[in-house]
Every structure is written in C-alpha cells, then in structure tokens.
Image (cartoon, rainbow, N blue to C red; front, side, top):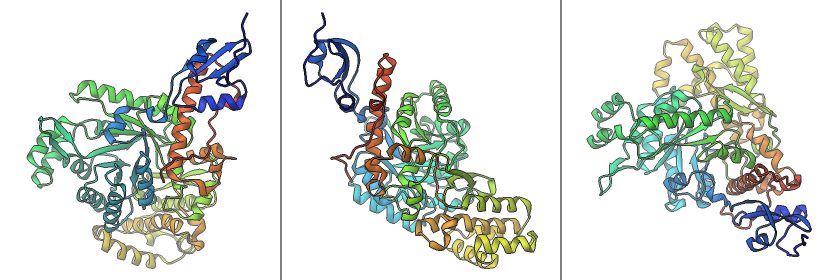
Length: 525
C-alpha cells in the first residue's frame, strides 16, 4: 500500500510546482506516492517515494559553452549585439559588463572622435571587465572601417564583433594579427579576439581559416604588423567565435536558425578536422532571440552562446528615443519589413526595420527603384523629382548634395571625389542621405519626421512583447538591459528543464511549463 508523504518539500499544486522548477540551482524530482504525483527539489524526500523522473540543477551560468565564458571572462554565454549609431551605448555596454554579460558598442555610423571617446569611457567605467566593439563592413566607406580598427587598437579593445562582412578586408585582418604573440612558454597568444557575425557558409569559412597570405604580406610590407605576427598568422583562424545570424534586425538574410546553426557547426567541424588549431571555433546563435524559449532552442541546437539585438534597443540604457521605444513596445512578430540599407545601398543589400508606425521602408524602396531605373538625378522625370523632393526629402536635391559635400569632406573626402563626373554615384550619395538621416531622426525624436523613422528591428521584438505581456517587463520603465538578459537566461534554463522532463514522459500542467518573468532582487544596473 502506498502512503502519502506529508512534507512541505512536496509540490502538488501548480504554483508550488512552478516554484520548484524555478529553483534552478537544485535538482528536480518528479515522484509518485499515495497522494499522487508531486514535485520536489529535496533528495531525501524523493528517496521516500517512487521517482518517476529527475533533472539536474541548471543555473543560467551553466548554459552554453564553458569555453566561451572562460575565453571572454564572462559569467554567461550571452552577448548583446551591437546596434549602429551608438544605440548600443556606453551605458548599455557598461551595464551588461557589470552583470557578467558581453556587449558590443555600436560604433557603426559614429564619427571617429566620438568612437574614441566612447571606448575610453567604457574602459574607465567597466574597470577591466570585458566588452567588445562593433566593426561593420563598410564597402562604400572604407575610411570608417579603418577608423574603428584604429580606435580599437589605440584604446586596447580586446574584442570586436565583425558584422555584415562579405569578404575579409585588410582592416579586420590587421586587427586580428596585431594581437598575435607568444607567451613565456612559447605558446601562441591571440590578444585581439574576433566574433564574426555571418549568415552564409562561404563567409563563415573565411573566418574559420587563417588570414589570406596575400593580405598578410601587404600588411607586413606596410608596417602594420610585425614579422613575428606575419609568421604566426597561418597558425590561427581569423575568428574565435562565429555567430550564426538568422532572422534579425538590421543586416540579415532572414535565414531560419534551425537550418543555419547546424549548417555552420558542420562546416566548423570539417574545417577543424583539416586544421591544426588547438580548439574549434565556437558557433553562436543570433536572430529571433527575444524569449527564453528561443534561447533554449538555440542552445539545444548546439549554439555555444546566444546573441540578442532588437530587444536591447527597447531598453532604458539604449541610446534610442522614447518615441522609437514606444513603437518597439507595441510591435508584434509580423511588424517588420525589409528596406534598402544605407551603407550598402549600391549593392542592393537590405536591412530589416520596424514597419508599424513608420513609412520608412516603402519610401526607401522607392529610392532604390529610382536608383536602378535612372543613370543620374538629371534623368528622373520632373514630376517624379518634385514628388521625391517634397514628400521624402522635404528639400531640394541641390540642398541635399550640399549637405553631402559638407559631411563627407570632414569624414571621408574620397566619397565626393568618386562622385565627381559620375552622376550615378552622385545620385547614390543623395539617396543615401535620406537613408542615413532617417535613423538619426528616430534617435533625436524629430516630430516632423516621425513617418521617416528608420528603426532596425527583427521579429524577436514582437515575440518578446508577447512573452512579457501582463508582467512587470511590459512597462518600458522596467526594461533595464541587464535585467532583460538575466530573465532570458533564467527562463532558458527553466525551459530546458521543462523540456527534459517532457522527454522523460512527464506531462506538467500548462501553467508550469512557461517561465514568467518576476522582478529580480539582485541585478547589476
């Protein structure tokens, strides 16, 4: 005869079962006694009943690859990806570094002097804790890429997040090799870490292999690296980590994460078997990571770490306007659209942006269609030109060109030189003026330009809003970036344990199966 065990450690109702599952630093036992099915975290209580299933303790700090945490000296296998124009701000990076997460400063689009100031401010604020800086591929503005690398080297930034690369450039190779050396025991040391964010296997393979020999020779001849660094270049891959970027905000190929992550892991394994690297390059997951379920799924796919993006833009620490954050807080999973990018406009590259509350995507697409259809501003029919000037630019093309000249003379004079005598190039710069300014109008909360706000956003933002609906995180004033990261990682650990119990045949009540964020008492801000 089975006797019911009377113990406060046994949970039988939904609230108590949920509480036991939420105790992540203790194992969970599902038992049967005379009172039926119960859940407990107490091993002694479990031994006095029939154990049906058990899952081990799973603190959030144990998720992902321990080598990622050790290599980057962080507590969590979690990174906040960069958001351009400094939206991933000094405050944001500092807050996450203080809480044991890796975060990238959004250097893309920021003038070089401000990049220097920002990196110096972060270094001072974090007190030696790790952080990274975004290095975005800028084929139309190579001077920007050079400026970011030089600023990182001057400020001894030991990690960059290389994003939107189509091919390796001299600048990303220079950053990687400039950190090579040997320790006292003669082992190779890679002081400059590279996390490459990619969505295509052919790009990933370039970062999985050593720097191209031709690029190494050119850097050595130019005095950018030492002879020892040139010699060591063949012994290390270009990246320490490769982030599989799926359906994300900003630059994205909108690849499905369950397809992309295993594909890159298989490629990594093949390249590693052919190499003599002491350890394989780690593969992380980005794009669509806005909920605990998504993070848990990424880890289950084999991701060494997860990367969030869109949801951080809605945090208090992000350098984004209140108006933009209100729009982000209202977004659903289907409220995004692809639009031409500013930095790779001529190549036809798109970025994913928020559709709800703004007309940017349709207006940007109209400009790209005009760029494809005409050889220069002078070829645009008068009626179409007047409509573009009045409806989209709200000023004449001549005035816009004057702004372009002033801007690039200070930033990258080569851009203006290349446009002289080239009407198509000049038209591209004029159209890029709108694309570039639109994100600035959003950040500045320009009320006259609300319809033109460019807000980079992926479907993860809508999924996040749906997850936190009815909880304290539904209020924008509670969305501290370190708290978002902590809740997602706690929820991912919770979800993983629920899935393990399901795999063992345990059917939990529906109310116990989904992690619900509750205010945290110990979050570094």
